[in-house]
Length: 83
Image (cartoon, rainbow, N blue to C red; front, top):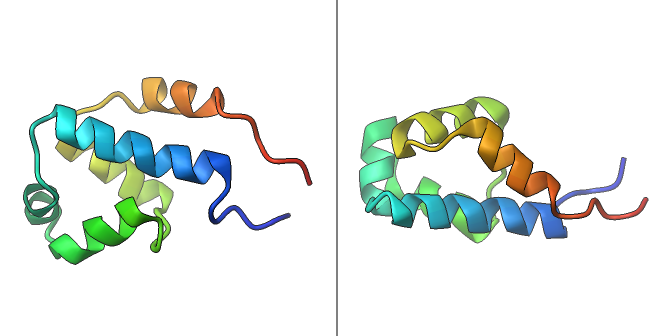
C-alpha cells in the first residue's frame, strides 16, 4: 500500500477538519481542551504533520459537532491516488 501522507485525500481531510472547526466557531485551543490535549496536537493534525487515527477522528467529530458520514462522503469525492 502506498503512503498517504500529502496525498490529495489526506490534504482534503485536514482542510475539512479545519473548515468544520472554524464553522463551529472553535479555536484549536478549545478543541484541544475539550479533548484533553495540547493545542499543538490539533495544530499538528491540521498542518498534516501528525496523522489522525479513526478514534481521534470520531472524538473530533463529537467535539466539533460534525456528521462523520457526511464528512466521509465529502472526503470520498476526492480521488484516490493511483498505486
